[in-house]
Image 1 (cartoon, rainbow, N blue to C red):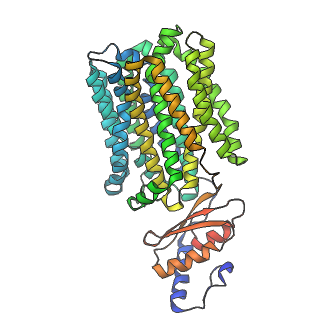
Image 2: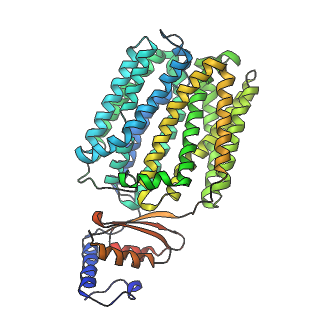
Length: 490
């Protein structure tokens, strides 16, 4: 009878249950494909096509940020509060529907849900383009958010990629969102000059149709829909995630960060145009070098945080700098140079935090609850967009530009106070073992054996799904032993 890998020789005698358990593991090993350190052509196609969907979809949303407040003042029935609501309501409908749509995709298919969401998004863009009242634009923006496909796209990425390459795919998608944000701030003022905000909404609808084409013709179709607790929400994990104070602190952080970003863009077009003399049509000349320089400045801090394990200090420093940048706007209203420096500092800190927060969520959450933790995190992110737009508009209407800026700066200081209590994260990686479905007895035996492998920090077994979610130390783990256990991809 074949035995366990050598590190399990200390296991109990070969009882019938143990023999059966070993045979199950060997069966998986015989049928699994060989491990590969490089992405397959399908995985590369998946990464680029899904990143393309995110880019063209988010680009239209970001393009209105630097121009909408001034446009909103031309709409019938407008008020500062309603203008802010129009900017932020997208986040409300997105936050309410992204998790339900992800769960629906488990039942009816990923592509069906994505195409349906893009159709709703395109319809909302058309409604906003045809509207001449602020109420009509608000409805259109709400519909845009109702096309909530973020969690479904992530689930599709998980279906089409092996576990060991999933982080690369998610990183590619994350970069595409950052590129769309930077490009949107530059292209929005340019398109506004050519076709106006109404035209931007039409362009957004066309981009959504283009994204549908990518779904149909470029994105591979998965053969099966598996459950991926590292990327998808598991409803049974909500309670544990919502009781985790470290995760809640990060959820509060992304809420505040998106609140501040959206609130700032309610008043920024007015601040630039009315006080510094920069017309909307020329604001791209300011945003372009700032976004490029902010990205360049961000890179060494991210490397230092991850490679030198300075995550906590870099994170807290970025939050403090974000507050400083917001306060700097009080003194930048008469100087383009001062405004440019303030914006550069703001977006550098923002980019560092935008990259650090999801990484911290992944490091802190239990390995089998990472998908749920990220779902809650994303919901807080979109709620921050909604609150920032709505309250930012109300604050602007009541106390002017300074009232909105001061509120954002104070909220960042509250965040900084709470963030100082965070612990230095453990610099461990996630790892997934794909196994045959096991009985509880076999699961317990396997868990104990895997836990003894050097470098394995935590093991969470999900027997009915045939998956083990691990937290490992990449520097010390013996991956050959892990592969011997599953015979599958990690």
